[in-house]
Length: 502
Image (cartoon, rainbow, N blue to C red; front, side, top):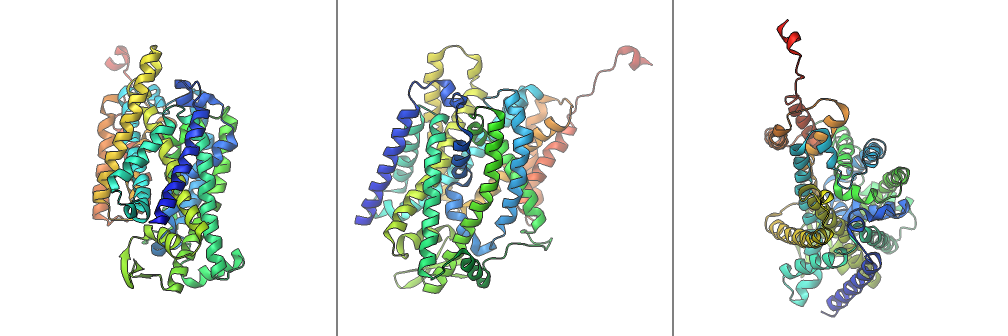
């Protein structure tokens, strides 16, 4: 009980700091501040903050747990991310800056028409609501099990407090606040992972990273490369999927691009993206090493056991089943015998979750205001400011409901659920932008929503018959389905009457 109260106090103090940052960044804030940060963000600040936004609580919790089922196969996808980020920096970002976009989906209106524009924005809203709710659910679940439930606080109250705190510190400054808070949150997340890894290394008498790598290699948890084409972790599928996931979930995502568009110039934004692509390789490898150490430590001490793909943890003198998502919090909070690890884990977990959730809430508000309420065409500043606050509050409510629904139906690792949802909801966006950028054809705009909906449906049916052989490569396949569907909607140029008669 005392530990729970202490941790709750630390979380409260942490949010006081975030609120003070919001007061500073939200001074004299207007729509330009909320949506675009007045294009005044230093690129290195955006880059560092985007580490946390890109990783989120999913990487912090689920990637270490994922090591049990697929070892280091995730690194194959991370290498694909690097290629995707380079495409974003030198293909997509010049487009966004040249057109001076607030919402990146405005490009679809210029290229195809209103229905395509609304379709793209709608798929983003669906994708981001799913992603943000998954991420917040993960953190709420951990806080509920290890902190709040011990104080008698129901899960629904934990979720309400989590979302309410995000709303409080983002409703004024919007993206300008998020750029600064994400920087702080990234720092805490990386410190938490680093301190935990150092503590385990110390207790296991591993004196260097070389010793860690040797121990991981001997344990059987360190396999990285998969060359069997029939395996869902086959290198080719993972690498290609990683590239397209980065393009779709970062380059075609209003949430991630909104931060980049606050940079002063295109060159600054490209520096941000390229540096991020390199740093993420190192950081993701670090989290996989941490995951392997957690499994090895649990096996060595008898606190956990991983048998036939199932994680078992010791509770009350017996081994019980647990989700792999619970491995890191279980050991960090109960068995590493370090107050510093406990404190940093909780702060790191909260920081990891909110570094993505706060920007998601801001991006959802931005997209709805710009793409559906036509803010850029309205002149009434009082109406715009009032409406923006209502939309911001409404999106908070949507996330709240989505988290509760996910809490009822989820029965798999959260990271798998996020990527599975993303392959279906980001696929049409990938196809729309690819068709727009690499062809010059016009299409029958009014039928585009049909193609965008049918593509993921057809792909879902295909995956059912092939036992999901494509794996994460479902995303580029989904984009290809949409691209092919748009080919059937190409407008034929009308010939002059004289040519038609002849």
